[in-house]
Amino acid sequence: MRLDVLLILLCFGQLALSQTKNEKEERILLSEFPVAAQKVIETLPKHCKRINFYKETDGQKHSFEAKFKYKGKRYSLEFSNEGIIEDLEVLTKFKALDEEKRVTIKNYFKSSFKKHKLIKVQKQYIFNPQFESSEFVNQILSQKTSIAPKFEIIAEVKVDKQRELREFEFDSEGTFISFRIVNQTSYEHVLY
Image 1 (cartoon, rainbow, N blue to C red):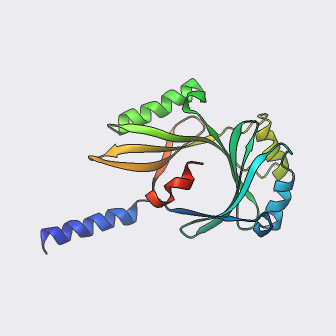
Image 2: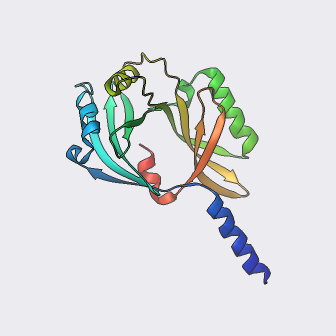
């Protein structure tokens, strides 16, 4: 077998093994959401602004997402196909994280990459079924929740002389869990 053919096959093998974030969002009407999700959205505080509704596809997974602004912060509320809350994410600044968690995350990037640039930081609150849906959402919006958030960070990193856009997941203590490569075509909507 020729060396160039072997290298190409190896590259495709590596691509097949890595997870890629290949999200596509389509703006839809609230009436196109599952009924259970519509009921939760109807309980959002009246002061929520710029509420937009999306159907999201990421590979085989389909979900629904409501994005809105509340008290100066940007939120994203994601639902399953059945209308059950999956998570509520809030856009934040890296410097707003607890110092201990910030240091843990910073150390991960410094030890793993020659260069990195943080692009987007979110606190991610995973839905806990012990709460009612509207109670879960309202606790987070009022910042009176006992649920510790995970962190999702989109960063540009340098890997073997190439730059990659990746979505990193960290647990509530700032410890690295996983990453996915972000497909450049889905990059634009990822920023909000």
